Figure 1 (cartoon, rainbow, N blue to C red):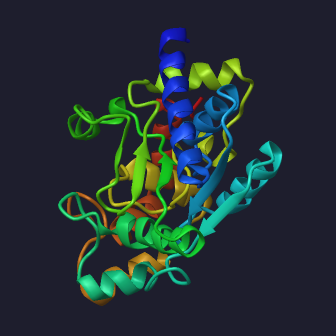
Figure 2 (figure 1 turned 135 degrees about the vertical axis):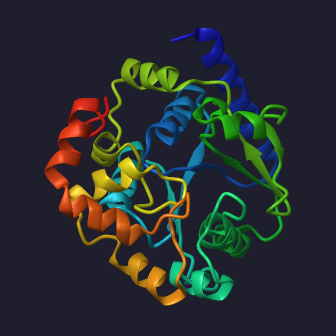
Figure 3 (figure 1 turned 30 degrees about the vertical axis):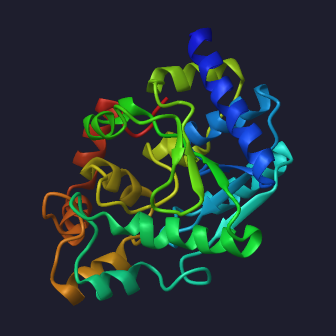
Length: 273
């Protein structure tokens, strides 16, 4: 692992910690239980910066995800904040699909804002009023071409235009997936089982997931998407990118399960290292 890259990230976290101290608010790590947000905890520990964790539930979580987040918070001795789209804001995923009239898409990915960002803003405002809040995200430019364009010129510490008075902190912007894996290995850290099995953690459904992710999840939880399929039927619109209906993905998977899983096994996707 490149020490120059690590040191740069440590300096960003230290500066964010200093700014949070000045604001008299905790430095918050957006923790999902995945490899990138786990890296943030380790970096904060290495930088000797006091922090707390915040987990933004969507009510679409994979089974066991929230329990893992709680276990990790206990293991590191960190305070954990958990926000909820219903108790802290206006409604769950079905509520917003019906209200807006279609599922989230590349053109309008409203789910993150309505289910996570705004509920967490309301939650934190109850605790800290209008004080400045510094939130650490595990965003990496190399994750996709889309992200590399979006974050090309963005500073690692900057105002969060979605949340007035909040600041975004992104210390691993320039890391690759291999950098993250190397850093976790060097620190003997194992990410949650769900990530190794499905390649994702947190939400079971996302309009940006590849079909293969849905297939891996369906192999373990064949009924997990029934509520979303019901929503597709109710509004008559697809829920998956590329104008695909999730019920079609499920039906195809169940009809060709052995063949699909054999192909995924051959590609090495069912057990990511």
